Image (cartoon, rainbow, N blue to C red):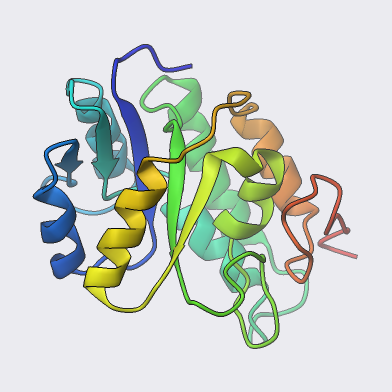
Length: 203
């Protein structure tokens, strides 16, 4: 569990410059971007730097699990060979090694930028599978918030509103447990129940 005074929130999804600029103007929010490059190491570094802020909220525009999330989503794309999980397992192993080496720890919360339709599900009719709204949210529903809006101004307003109403609750389970859940999570199920959507991925 984090010991720094700020609430650290990772922003998951495609964040526009307009959204980041609007959020960065808030007096209660410090914005941390990755330096130099994208990828696991840059995101891990951004999370480490977030620990040095004292503002009420620190919003991190990078996630060490981003590649894991992308490969989990890709496993459920129609063009992907059924049961092809090698890329997911590779990215999961990389993230797990970095987490075990204390190069990063999970944020207090994830805040997901989602399409307005089907924002509460891992995938619904016409909605792609989503790692954050599916398996990650299923293990700790109160630690994954959602902003469903399309325009930067509406996204910023929704984001700031969500920051002010984040619920308390149990800390994250281990990253091993999160990845085990991801391997057995069926993306067509609702994520509100820890048992909903459990399936055998490679069956």
